[in-house]
Amino acid sequence: MGVSRFIKEASLENTMNYIKSITSKPIVSSAAVVDDVVYFGSLDQHLHALDAETGEQLWKYKTNHEVYGSPIIVDQVVYFGSDDGSLHAVDRQTGEKLWQYETGGIVGSSPAVDNDTVYFGSYDGTVYAVH
Image (cartoon, rainbow, N blue to C red; front, top):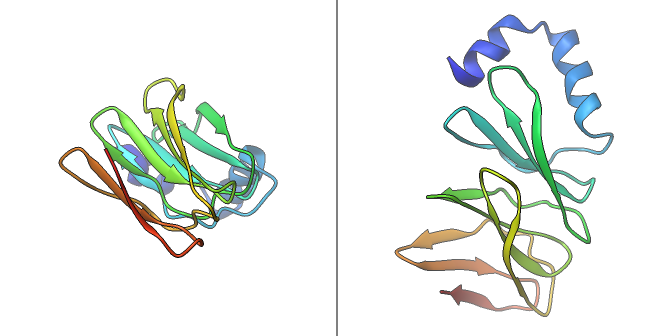
């Protein structure tokens, strides 16, 4: 089932080769998994979406800087911050940009969502509540 099946079937060597084939830069964010899709940010300036069963890349979304924070998925939206100073919201099925909220500093934190409000911190010293 999902990620655990993929991990069980892959040897450590194959897993390492697979990860390197997705991105040549480090992956420092935690992954989020919904409906057998794995979402994670990378220092290659992208948010990636992979099929958990096959490891196939479904899409990747380009930001203007590294992605350190972990994504969160609510309904059909993936929210995540980037060192480009923005919180990004993308469609979880297509990777299409829904909106972007710019701050005065790096957004390295992981967002939280309550009702229709997205909370996140920025290196500009502000906690934002966007709705």
